[in-house]
Image (cartoon, rainbow, N blue to C red; front, top):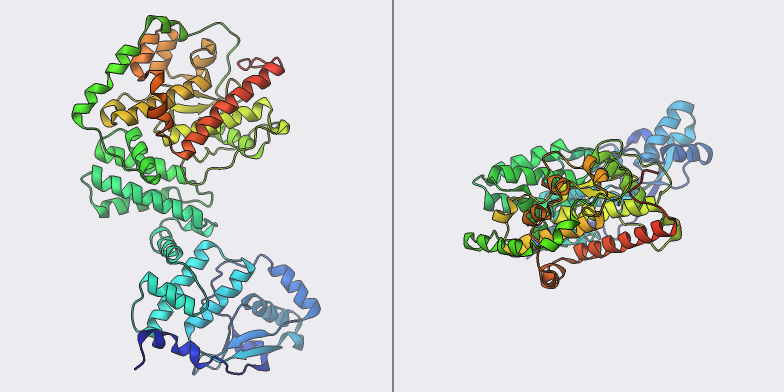
Length: 519
């Protein structure tokens, strides 16, 4: 008795070892393969056309013929060459472009032809992730039709392996997600070249947001799917930035659940990092306030609002997003002596962070590049700890970035004690690297909104207000409250932040440069 696996591969096996036939065919009798995995024109089209015009077809086309059809189809690559040959014959009328040598392969089944094209394109690395994913979806459909049954992803992986096209089940799952879930809402981004790593990161964000949505709100799975698709469409461009989608999802969940957006951001980050995140028990909330009271000491009051220094910087010449884009370009390319341009914020999420230039290179250790590096590190660290909207860039002045306020006080009610401690200590580290309490007051005021608690504390030199607004822990808690809790990415960014701050300060001292001066 023949089992199912044997039936799945019977079509391919019948032609195995069958002799190949070489013959001359009229190009009019050959059609391109309509399921060609590559959906975009070949970028080498004109070069290939020039080559064929001069040298003719140097390699025969491989074609096959479906049962009962008069025309042939291209079997394994060659759609571009076929189109060029037909064009050249129309343009020149030369017979060498009309009748061409072809290798005739016996017909087996549709899936074999599709996979032959897929393998050929893989050899040339000409497919986008979406093209490949759609081709695998088509292959699945053809294989299922031939077998008369539906395939699981594991069965598809096995069937493809038997056809000589091995893919892991995990990759097949990502491809299916891209085609079925993302492509209807992110067509421009995917067709613009969004690759497997980005798709995997969107999928992780989708899972995390869905879990929080269902856990924190009364909305349904269907409502989440509608919101996710709507937000994807809103930000669907060839210049895809996952940070935009993440912020929009955080805002949507916060509004639906009536909770603070920073708490949502922290929970998403925890889930993306593989950590569980539980909201605090109500009885634990009261314990959070006691360290704030203990930390407000008279001897600390003079640190806020230092006004002993020089002229004011400004927050760049454009929007925060424009300043951010300029600084990111400097930090990631090392173009420290070019005037920054652009309007794109850095990727602050765990998905797709850009590598930073080494500060060990003298060529990249100028003040401008180090400021840009500080902004990127600070922005990344802040985003992953629910403080992303508090960090704004400083272009050409100060330390590259500034905090415009204290953390949202609603976090006290929405985070457990450990999470609140981590957020608070990250804020203080960022404040230290931005020199908020020692910078010239007139340099900071243009950066701080009128309603900012931080602005009021600095103007009034009220250290007590600042310490009461940001939980200030005993420094002895730093180890187990912060260092042990930070994941590897945050830890490396924190170390990089402090290291870059030191390098910037030493650089400025060596050149006798006042970092807070406009000059």
